[in-house]
Image (tube, rainbow, N blue to C red; front, side, top):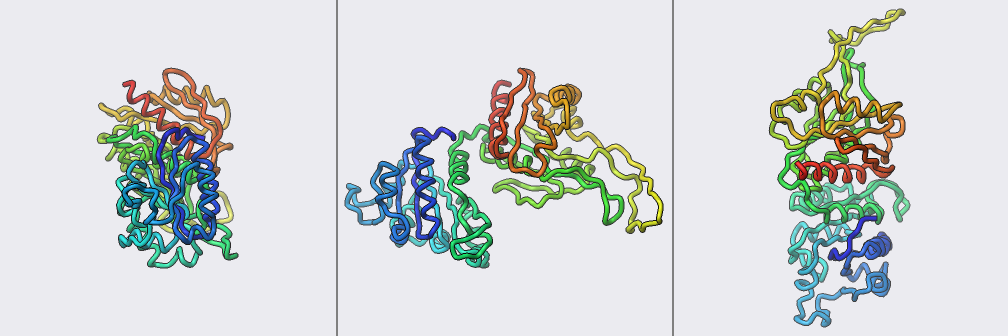
Length: 396
């Protein structure tokens, strides 16, 4: 669990069954040392009592815009003035619509409109509500206005239906809060990340590729953006959505990825090569589907460019970070790869323990030696790696 000692957060709770999860989120925040003020809508108190939230926070809970405990009578102004972040969890469809249109008819909506600090919401609603065009327009507007939208998740809902709309779990919201309050170690830096596999066609329906979900690369793009960087993600074919605030450039083949990277690398401060680039492409790929002939087939392969080595060899290269997925002899192979490519930092893992998973373990190799990162969710590893990169940049 991260250290939030002394960090000042306002937790808003609106009226939905997921309000019970807000109590667990509050417990996590207080346990981490955060100073949490709680504001609830009247509807929220139908699901979780203010007494529960007061007991967990150790502070008075506010529900009324006319609460006389605020000396100047302006709770909607005073309650958020010393806060570093406002998080509304759960955020109902109605409350999110209020934020979009600037409506302020209760304490929570009014203080969100009058805030000086960042705001994030964790949506929670029936899947049909979430999928409505009006809801999606509201979500897009909130994001465009700089409001963090954390979730929702897909799964079983209280109504008995299954689909998108359930609030993300308290542990995930807690991790987002830690990230939002983390130092902007890469503020002003331009970070270029490659992710996912490449696909080298044999014919229009077949090809050569590498196993890669893209999850680690996308996590690193997110972590770099959280650290304040301007991030461009050059991605091979994946089913993942680009992290908020990250520019994504879609490619298919290794040569396309190379061209996209070389175009951007000279103006980048950091290059993180996570993509599982195919080592070879097919010479003379067929324009039409190759039919079975009852016998074998011989393919002529040509080597693809080494994108990382090419970037590292630029006259003024960015700070280069490589990735190595090994099946054996992790240390020896990773160190040899780092020396061969002449890069300052390389992250390595055992391939069969990582592909397709949401967690991983990494070993970082640099001139100072080895730095193990124990198995954890990939986003947590990505945040640790970004801190390591930022420290190395600062030392330069």
